[in-house]
Length: 148
Length: 148
Length: 148
Length: 148
Image (cartoon, rainbow over all chains, first blue to last red; front, side):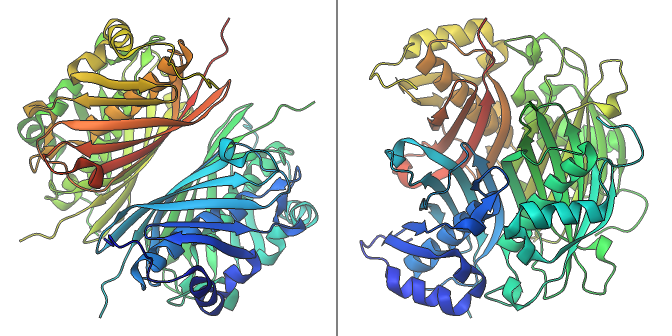
């Protein structure tokens, strides 16, 4: 567990890494707003293609965001870990987000040698005081393969 | 709960409905292989863009598939319900799927007036006896708005 | 994975094992009705002490039952595994069970060397056709320590 | 959502209420250490009966604690809500707690008219700096019946 106050990778480094290694996520328009050890905040600029019937942001958009943010928090903290794979995702959808950007705050509850556990709160950037209005919350676990 | 042996919508009807109303899912190349009341089996033809670092099918691909299959099972059974929204998703990833098609079998455990609960088993169509090798399992809940 | 048609331990053997090694569960009045490889069905005879405000069977009663049934299914299938520890539990409560016995059917979706995944459906034995009326559904994962 | 700085019920009031209305929980030796709007911290004094094979605190002990703490946080915040029923529980077990007291910190992420969502972090009071060593984390949802 890192006790230092600096993450091993910066936001721009993580964005570049993701763009290169995880092309599926390039469609997401995800930008990293802050990264600290065991913490990462990101935004996705949503568009028409993120909407589901009813005009709200789709569940799969938020699931992908939660997974991506936690995975990047692991990599940012450790400086490696891109082989970490999701073993469990649990997500509660609390409010239907309108057609606005989403902000996700992820933190790592545990970061062991083999197992990471994190949670992510997702907010809708709808002009109100977002911190009072989370739209979804996820808990995720990852298996971290041994480095060779 | 439908006790009839016929779903209200067929596979082709559901595919046409989804293509029209949920454009995000069009990228998924999802085809419906069987639909019965409270049951739906679908396939996604995977490609390069579904891969994550390590060369396996990404978690968000499987999450989107599980959500979509259960939502379509609700609509196929009821003949309506497109406003049903996911309230909880829990997913366990049991095995890393190689670069093959995925098959998902969804069934509804409960289909009440306001609440639906389903589960989905996802298999990798890797040429082995898929039924012995599930790669992921999800449980999902949906809130069904009252019809006006 | 056991492919044989016989579990390694019978219901009475499992009940005796549990009575001896897991005293907390003795309060549960759990009896095993059927055990097969990767499958176990059990009943708990409920009483006043299982009720919560509102007169329905409490959540913790059902959580303990789901955990116990899956753990016993692992041990019954393998003939060992009592050191298996729960790593994740997800449970959906679908209907409030009245003051009747509960029946739980557990099956193992995956039983690997180090990881087991199971699900459990819980029914209320209220005199109706129980199989149509599940009250709760759980998915559980276990870490199986290496044998020495 | 309460914005006041005082909960509607104090710790001793909640303990008395629970002792009277939810007898199953009396075995738990749960004491409330702090209650604020949307927050509650409790301790259980564990004993032999909370142990599982391997000598660690059992999963059902932690599940019951998480459920109870969140339910009490709802009642403490609202001054009513004892009919709130758990609709989903997700729990990750991160570390095997030794035979020490458990401390649970519960907070409500959402407290709407009909739905509450909370999470609970459980620590083992093993003499180390507990805040660094969570043993389990749960997310829970509750349906709050309409008052008549």
